[in-house]
Amino acid sequence: MTTPAPHGAGEESLVAALHPAARSIALRSWRVLTLAIAMGVICSMASRFSFPGALWIARWGPLIWALVGGARLGWEFVVWINRSYALTTRRLIAASGVFRRLRVDIPLHRVQQVVVDRTLGERMLGLGTVLVTSAGSQSVDLAWVMIADPDAAAEKIRARISGVEPAPLVIGLAGGIGSGKSAVAAAFAARGFVVLDSDTQAKEALDRPSVRAELVKWWGSRILTPEGRVNRKALADIIFADASERQRLEALVHPLVRAERASLIDQARGRGAPGVIIDAPLLFEAGSDAECDLVLFVDAPRDQRLARVRESRGWSAQELHRREKAQIPLETKKAKSDLVIINDADLASLNRQVDAAIAAMGSLPRRSRLPERPGDKHGIRET
Image 1: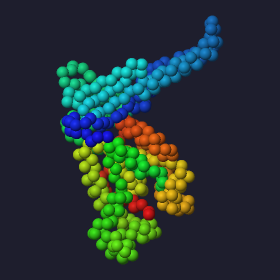
Image 2 (image 1 turned 180 degrees about the horizontal axis):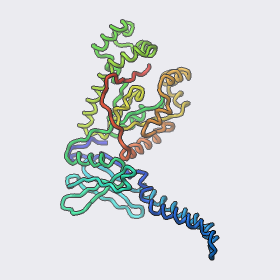
Image 3 (image 1 turned 60 degrees about the vertical axis):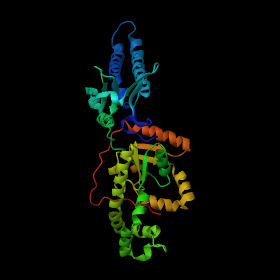
Image 4 (image 1 turned 30 degrees about the vertical axis):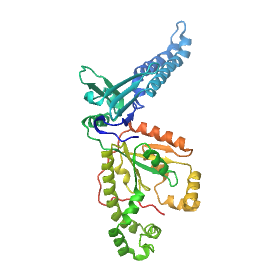
């Protein structure tokens, strides 16, 4: 993905892609579903009356109306699949249609007004419609119908029109040891996302002279290599044996890492990156999920994860179990995440899932990012 240029200059690139929310299928079908349920109930009561065909109606009527309701849901599902919206560095796009494809493009420089409209049904389901008019038009020229978080979508359009880059989407990566979070991060990087490797940032912070001097003051020269650098294995032996020592280290390193992360996110905004990936070994344990708009969980079967760490790190099954036991259970992390990618096949499968995740992000509600609080932690990975 190319870097967007302000005001549509340069090569065009995608800023946002989304679909109507899946719950819009039920909203668009409610009238037929209500009628089908009512008629099914009436038909089931026909056997109580004596008129020609009453038994036939009582037997087959409910089934027929159930098929009518199911057919309506099926049709709306097909319509939903074929409806998509996009914002690029130059245009707004809305595409729809099953048998005949309709696509509406409006150049950004012609957009005159962007408003959010909500029907009663949309308000009840937390949805909304973004309506766009263009210069010289007296009516709505383009609509993003029944999307989740329409206010954020409208604001992104307005920011693009004004030439001010909106803050990039911040996505946290979570998952088990050996699940392949780095491979997922690389796939996002190939699509223009900026990847922030928190473990690398923490390592760089440890190599700062001021930090190194403080560590030597605490634990002596035993935590240094012969070359005078911080020995991460010796450091891990100390902090993972004593929770208080680990907290002391995190209190020293985390503010440095978070400041560096904020600077890099600002740089990503200036580059027009679609999002930032926070690849933190202990995202939930460290509380770094509070800095994210969305969290993506990378899943993989245990036998595959064990094979990967055995090959890359020389760990045994017992060692993997020991380290995972010190973390939040994987099922808990998965339940607290917004999206899941299963990394159990080849790279092509992984890339398809990453593309699907990016498409789904436009319709997901954002988490409320919290400001930094005293005592916030940054996880240090065992090595």
